Amino acid sequence: MEAGVTSKGTLITGVIGDDVHNMGIGILEYALRKAGFTVVSLGIHTSQEEFINAALETKAQAILISSLSGHGALMCEGFRDKCLEAGLEDILLYAGGRLVVGAPPWEETEKVFLGMGFTRAYPPAVLPGAVIADLEADLQRIGV
Image (cartoon, rainbow, N blue to C red; front, top):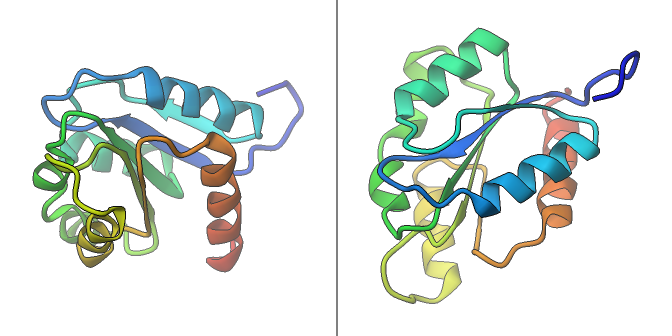
C-alpha cells in the first residue's frame, strides 16, 4: 500500500490446518495488495483460532482461507460458528483451492462451504481478479 492511500479494507489470509501449499495464496495476496487492500498474511499451518484472533485484532472485514491438501472441508468445519462466538457476525469468509479429496463436481464442493456459512468458495484455478471483484461487491453489500 502506498503512503497516503486509503485501504479498501483489511483482510486476513492464510493456509488452514496441516497444509503447506502457499503459492496460490501468495499470488492472491499480491493481487489483493495491488488492488488496494491491507493484507495480514498468517502463512501456513494456520488454525481457525489464529484466523479469528487476527481478525479481531485488526478489525478485518474478511478472512480468506486457502487449502490445497484436500482437507479444507474438514479444517473449516465449525468456522462460522466460532466467528459468531467471537463477535465476528459480519465477517466475510472465503475459501479457495482444492478443498476436498477427490474430484467431485465443483458445485458439490461449493455447496458444502456455503452450507458451512462461507460467503464464497473457489476452485483451484480461480483467477485473482474474480476473487477481488467478488470481494469488492460483497464489501459494498455489507456497507464497507
